[in-house]
Length: 213
Image 1: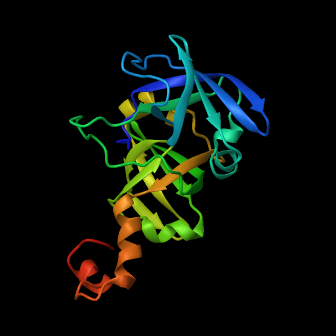
Image 2: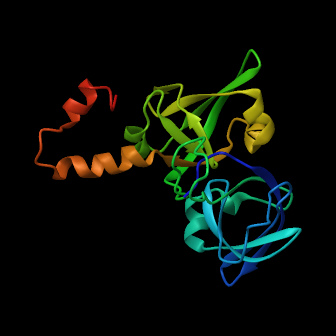
């Protein structure tokens, strides 16, 4: 489990083919490795990966064919920057929202517009994910916990402040950039529970009381 608060931007030093999969080597930059050990989980651009080898200058992860096909990790190259976050520990401050590190789909940046000192982006999403995205709700983009500014048919908009631009890979986004998306856990499980419930809590009830839009 993660929070969507990026703690370091690492850099890909090697993508080594490994029997159809990839062994991903990452220089962790400013990530504190004092409490990291083999087998620990680290979110790389929002994808939960397991540390399989490490030293002070290098973290290694095995990336399965399934992950390559369903996320943007297969599009990375040597030198690519990546968002890094260690798994949430009990007692840690929850600054973003609960993030599982399981990517739901790929989005695409379709516009980028300056707005004073911030930048506004519009993201196209797969049709199957639209229902989970609500104005002022939470969304995870490449591991970054963000607030949805607005929704439109086929996608949503976000506003990125200077600090977030500086501390994440969002500063590199251009029109056409593919991004990993994870929808809010509450929205996903709420949809699954609603058809099964026999109580008076319906979708209309939740909408009337401000839980969904």
